[in-house]
Image (cartoon, rainbow, N blue to C red; front, top):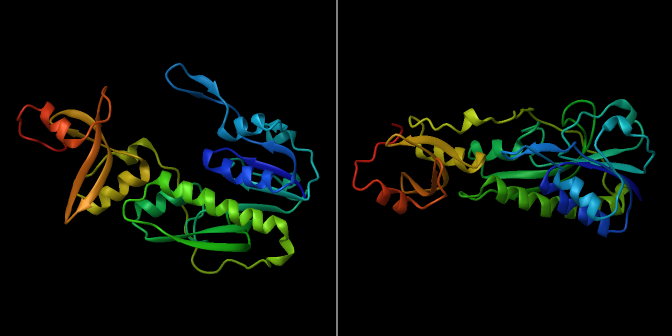
Length: 268
């Protein structure tokens, strides 16, 4: 099958790799343009861009360059709105890591973790002009463990999504389209402001915030810190790893030792 692949983020790479290894002809790869990264703002290609270069594939970073007639287009975490010229050129399919129509939009995994969900699903669906509203071809449910992080779930979605996509592309006619049913909900992009911890929230809610967003920011004895890894023990939040401003990550005991016996004041 002749394919055009569109994606940007790292968790897409194992899925695209599985598609390539299944023997399909990849006509081109579309990804986001390189972005400035780090203190020196070095222009850095996306993980999908690097993968395409490593595999000798044609890469485009501008969707306006699209001029292909593939058998199918595979779009996963691309981050670019597709216009009619793309959508009308071939059937277009997508992997979305939520139990649609729940959690449409840009952050389904983080939102599920933030909300403390214990189950979700990976859906293989048709791409339509309306956001994440296309018919579903395949669905695989998975469990979310109490300490799973965004990285953990992205790795799981990569594995499950790769299996689903290879299976589907081997014979698309075997998987009839099923319209989405139920109440639609939408996610949003998370910002640095969402990382600030409100200590009026419950320990479980704070734990969910940290594992969803990668950290929670607060002050301890006047020191700006990021809480990087927490667990719930009994009814309490247990800090396993944190990072004071300007220092390397450390465990809680090491941080407390550095306070030299001072009374611990959280959020101050």
